[in-house]
Amino acid sequence: MRDGVDVPGDSLRLIVMDRVPWGTPTILERARAEAFGGNAYKDMVVRLRLRQAFGRLIRQEGDHGAFVILDPRLATRFTTAFPPGIRVDRVGLAEAVDLVKTVAR
Image 1 (cartoon, rainbow, N blue to C red):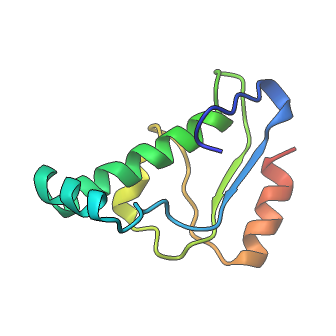
Image 2: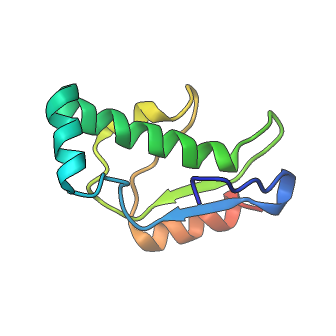
Image 3: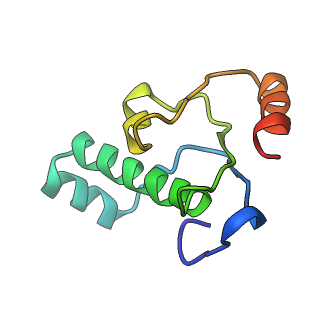
């Protein structure tokens, strides 16, 4: 979803991610983290992945929709991946469903 998908306008109004986009713990990923700052590198990668996924939803000024992450492990420090002025709500699943019904119309 983050890579190569371009759905313009009202055709895309909802993105749901089931988890925080952490890197896969491979030998290469561990070597990159060690070479580029450890946890700071890992955090940067997560922010970039979130920003790219969010950018698929909001492409132009008039676009709107809901971006939902179902993983409760989303740390507050990752919310800086979103543009200024974007409202971030931490809610339970039932409330998230109700919010999406109103936002993604």
